[in-house]
Amino acid sequence: MLDLMIPPITAALLILAIHAYLGLHVIAREVIFVDLAFAQIAAMGATAAILFGFDHGTPQSLVFSLVFTLLGALVFSLTRMEKSAVPQEAIIGITFVVASAAVILLAGFTAEGTEHLQETMTGTLIWVDWGTIRPLAAVYALMGIFHFALRKQFLAVSFEPERATRIRFWDFLFYASFGLIISFSVEIAGVLMVFSTLVIPAVIAFLFTNRLGLALVFAWISGAIAIVGGIGASFIWDVATGPLLVCAFGLVLVLAAVLRTVLGIRPQGKIAVKALARHDESGQTTHHSDAAAAAVPLSRSEAS
Image 1: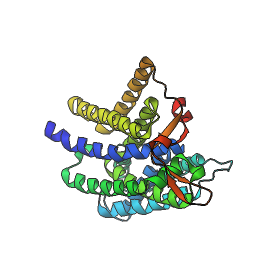
Image 2: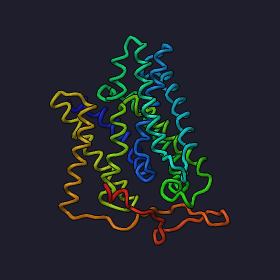
Image 3: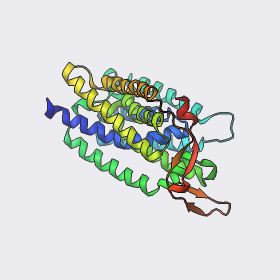
Image 4: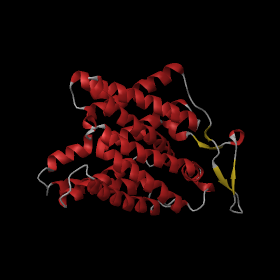
């Protein structure tokens, strides 16, 4: 049983490794459902690929998902309107609903439509093998390097947009890389787990700390507990892995909230972001050390 459990646990931990970081950005940007929207857009691409005769999980199916998510990245980068009466979350919600409806409609034209719909929601994590994990790890590693190299720009746009420049350009790069990652994740984990690994660990982290680096560690630890516990329980009880994993993430969130109350932890002040890019009036970029870390209000995490 342990031999069978190791590949799905490894794949899930790889997904968590990069999703937890992206989730911190999602919480800061207050675009909680952007991951669901991207996941459904990727699923819509995979469903369209089936109509053209390409099986789910094939390279051709992945290309369809990537093209659709790049279009989604363009839409989300152009609809960020800071002073508009229409919040971007409304655009994201509309995109999610339309993409979901499109997936259902397109699946209805395929012979395996019902099975495909279930796969897009819960994934095929239990059947993952090392041949799938290796390219997944390579893509995530490249995206990790990409985000590390551009971390100052991405952190500025997410955590202090009033000081950032060329916001729509950096937004497009962020959402394009986000969509690429989601495209690979949805093929394996499904829409529900993609959302869980992005949002729930980040919420747990900000319940306990206002330091971004420490928050990432909290997100990784809490997510790993949910993954190992959820997959282990699914094998022991012989139940569906995807839905049980999502429930495991929810249980860890509840336990974390109870622990926070018992310990009386209430992060005060602002979210400290190390070496956040700041732009002065002349347009030049300067970088601050830990002693002068940039910050934004923690009201969102306190509200959680």
